[in-house]
Length: 464
Image 1 (cartoon, rainbow, N blue to C red):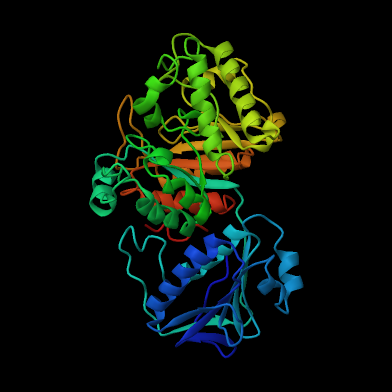
Image 2 (image 1 turned 180 degrees about the vertical axis):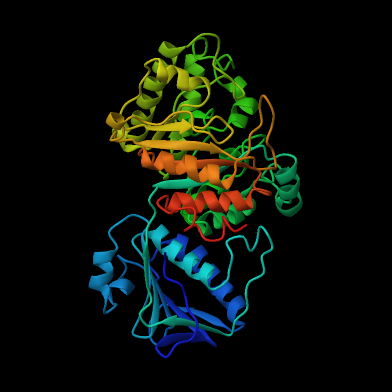
């Protein structure tokens, strides 16, 4: 069990009144521009008093810093902090000489330290999306011995916004649909204003990865600020199992006539599709984004009759060559996934393989039951394994839209089984348009952070 911020004791640190927070001005903009500002505003709402951000540490109650900054190095306990922070996205929350220290091993580690502290003092990750009131309290106490160190056990953790119309689409139109593009037209409502709120939720849930809305949306093309914002906030973007090479399906629907003969058919339109794929890599290769390999049929269907293994191998080989040519690096240095979704798993089962550096994204049966897990001898592959899981599903024999049909107990059973079998590279869950899935999504993200927790340790979930 992790440490908890406590009630008043004889040896406790008090946070109250006007609070000064010190940060390093050379820290990452994801911290300074977003998470730190949220800390200031949320703490102000909790205490009802002014919170001051400053770059000088004198008389500060709270220190926020990434471990490699000058501010962190100036702390008297720096050597202890540096030795302890030895994992990606790790953080320490501790009290030292009357100051609260929120220290991360990297930018996301520091962000998670901020949001863990806010969560413990009564600011729910869902305070915007579910209108959860912020708990007011004039004083916050922490034991002088308070020390919390934590890091994720699954490398990439996130969710997929899908089937987003009409519910999320109409809601986004009402709240964020007023932006006008350079042509004087209203922009798609899934724009950077929407994604700023969504990315904030993802990070507060200690996630780092997202497949953005794609039914009638093109994340990269609808608003050029979307991708920029993701990088600024520290969010990794991917594209779904049938959107290869950093391209959104809607981009093909809207612009396919510009690429060769306009057919989504690699045998008959290789030159056009190679151009389309290349543009996706050129647009995003300098980000943290993950590229999906392969090719399914147009509109989330099988690529065609038969197994198509030889053709799919040809496609993936060419895609990897394009990645290397565009980036100027070895292909293995760029994160890639191959999703074994629906018919594609059949290709794998019949012997098709991809290079060892590619993450194999295993999938459930769309109803929360895993279809495949890696054997013992395959678990140490460099690219590792991931899971694409479903709370929302639209397809035969019936839809499960806007309602979760996977019990928490089954999610725990299936996903801890995946973890035990070495599936630790990427966990992504399809939550549809988000609303209505708040409870299971919170559970999924907590479990992805630490799958070694038992059902009993996942406090609150089994009591509801």
